[in-house]
Every structure is written in C-alpha cells, then in structure tokens.
Image (cartoon, rainbow, N blue to C red; front, side):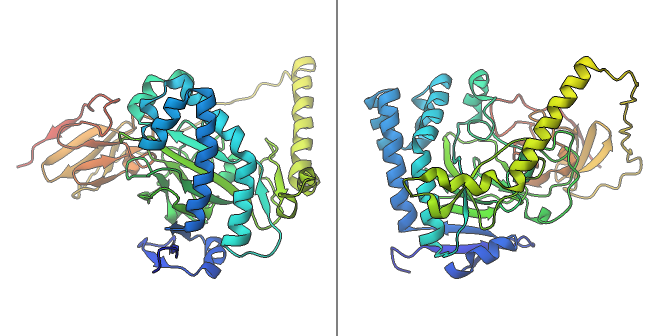
Length: 411
C-alpha cells in the first residue's frame, strides 16, 4: 500500500466482528447493509483535518490566549483538559462548533462527492458536532458546566439516531480529531442491527434491562473515520483514560431525509447548492418535506393541548400506575463467568476466585449489570464500559468509590 492510499475496511453486523477489506466503490452499499466502515491513512481526511485544526486554533487564540493555542498545537487536543476549566471547555466547544460549520459542510460534501465518488445529489445535515469528552474524573468535577450538553460535552447512552429526531436514512461520518483509545471510544452494538428494540418512555435510550450485548469499540489515529448508519445502536464509552477524546460528527442522507417523531425540526442541505453563493436555496426541499410538515402539525397539536389543559381541563381521572414485576431466579445454576440475576436488586456470578454477589444496577447511569460482560477479571457495564474488579471492587475510574460486594468461597 502506498503512503497516500487509504486503508478501508468493513465490519459485518454478524458475529464475529472482523475487519475485512472494502473497495471504495462498495462503501455506501455496505453501509446500507449495516456494515461499519473504518477509514484509515487517508491523505484527503488528513488534509481536511489540518484545515479544521487551523480554524479551531484561531478561535482558541481569540477566545482564550495564543499561548493555550500553541500548547494544543504542540501537545495535541488530547491534553485540552489540562489547559482549560469547565466553563472554558464549554465556551471553546461552542465557539469552534459555530466557527467551523461552513467548512464542515463543504468537507462533508467533498467526502461524499469526491472521496466516495458519489455522483448523484444527496443531503447534508445542517449542524456538524464537535465532541469534546474529557476524562470522567475531571468531567465529574465540572458537571455543573458540562452535564447538560449531551453529545458535545457529555457521553450518550445506547440509542439510535432516529430516536433523537435524526432521519432514518442518516449516515454518520465520525472523525477522530486526535488519538482515540480503548477507554474513550465510540461503542457499537452490531448484533442489534435491524432488531425491533422496545423504546423507553423518553424515546432516547434503550430500556436499562434490555440485553444490548457486548459492544464493539475502536482505537483510531487523527484523521481516521468511521462511517455507519445512524440506525446502528451506539453509545459513548465513559472516558477512563487520561486524555481528552475529540471527534467530529457529520451526517448525510442519499435520499430526502424524513423524520420519525416530529418533536424537532432538523434542516438538511441539498448537496448541489452547498457551495453556491445562494446557499439558502440548498434548504428549500427540506422545508417542503414530509418531516417539516409533520413537525409543524405536531407543534400546533401541542399548542392546542396546552391551551386545552389550561382553560378546558379534562376532569377524567387516569390510572397511571404500572406493573413492573421482575421474575426472580430462585433456582440458580452458576456457570463460570456467566452473570445471573439473583433477585430484583442483585446479580451473582461464579469467578475463578469464588462466587461474587453485587448490586444489579450500575451506579453511573443505572444500566443493568446483568447484561454486562466479564473480561480480564473485570465486569463491564454494557452501556458505557465502566468496569469494576471482581477481586477488589475497584472501578477503572477513580471518580467512583470501590463497589461493595459479597464474596463467597466455594469448597
């Protein structure tokens, strides 16, 4: 392979998840089948990233100081948390996001049209995301400033993009701005591809008891990228490293995007008009789409219900109680390293050092640890890969106190 030749591989949603070589001409067809595309060593992506970095560093020079911009340039984005406090992290993230939108829109267009050599019109989502996930120990100290900024400064939980109002046909381009390691990666659950997953009341994440399976994660270098359907169940790995993970997300659709729940309006640009001086024309088809109409009608319906509830209150009583009984496992047969539910609040597992009993729900975001997995003597939460040692109870993140559990010695 020449130095300028990108390495492109594809991972099937079927086990085992092995990277297989992928031709450039096959990329979009394989994404449509649920495969995850990995792009490494691309001169095009590297060149575009250099331009992004220059714009971003100029913003830091103006917003913070030239000294901090120089430190980032020499040490990398991975050390961002050592240079900025929580409020500055928020300001930098927002400023860079706003300042780079036009550039990222053109980058997205060139990626599809030039890099993937796709000749037909397509649609680009109007807002790219600059994701800045600092080590969780530091995030925990700055929750007041960072927690509300889901997706840009705070981790996400297992979801499909259509659950948060992106189009069903969205394709995500996820780009590493600096090194991405196992411990601060993006998580995929390929075995859930095309499966019908019961939505939660919020329609944002899977139910905490849903068996998502063991996640797939990646180590990437700056400029490396992942290309995947937004309908893949995916999440953020809790950052248990000592580095900030910075990444970019752009979205595009090969057909006119349509919404799902119509709670939000998300505009998309026609690729034929993105670089045109009359760029506003790029959005016209999006405004006349079924998605925009659905949003407008639902918004009017919400206003009517708000008026009705305020001035024409319905006195009919409604029983909102629910039955959420959990079947208890009263006849356990313990197999090595197979997590089982002992009761509604407790799990139990046989390890090489004896039987361990521990709380069922993760103390981070209350995911069901019965759906977790064991690797190298640690039990991993399925949602964000937070793990604790089955011998000591110590977590792989110092922001959490060691887990209290009961250990039984076997004869």
